[in-house]
Length: 246
Ligand SMILES: Nc1ncnc2c1ncn2[C@@H]1O[C@H](COP(=O)(O)OP(=O)(O)OP(=O)(O)O)[C@@H](O)[C@H]1O
Image (cartoon, rainbow, N blue to C red; front, side, top):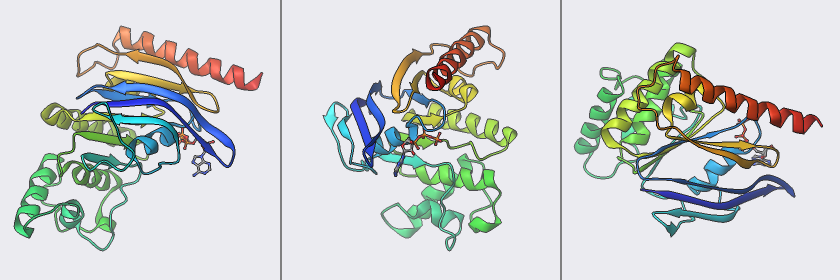
């Protein structure tokens, strides 16, 4: 499904956090919300998810106004947020409906896909950070949502695990082509994953640039075109620091 974000603004205790944020995610597109800490990336994502509805402006799903948590939606946060009293397979099948056997089978299949086959009976406290996040990815995907919202999903992981899970995310996207919006402050991550980068800056955060990346995936780390793009994004963020310090 496609998402239209139109003039979204949010104020906390009289302080504007984001102002007039507008962008579109086409069906199957991977859009990155990129910006430095505090520019309102998570605030925008919460408005899109419907977890926060105290914003101004409009969020549309397939061009229809939507204000509540959409059921065709998977969300992945920075921490796995698993239920500690449930094992891996029960955490993943928890949100499913239907006969128990069927739910477990679906969960088992998706756990295989995220590389956790054989770990179904493990409890969250027995998992590494990467395994916990794989479980969270499986839980978000098990309902086969049309949209996936990701809030800094890999920023708590070590560099190697982060790369592994970015690759896994792209494989999954390749299979199902959900529309994805991913919040990140990692420029390399945005350049590796995204079809489009919405660069937020300022406080309150506003859309500074909307950059389309047409380069085919998988993208080589040292690609000169991406290196140039990274340079220009860094310059934009640098400008932000100058403005703030002025
Ligand atoms: N529940 C809240 N109550 C009060 N202020 C809030 C709340 N949530 C966010 N803010 C404020 O809104 C602004 C944007 O916060 P937000 O978390 O969206 O930024 P961010 O870009 O996601 O930051 P980070 O990368 O550090 O997670 C910040 O100034 C923050 O203090």
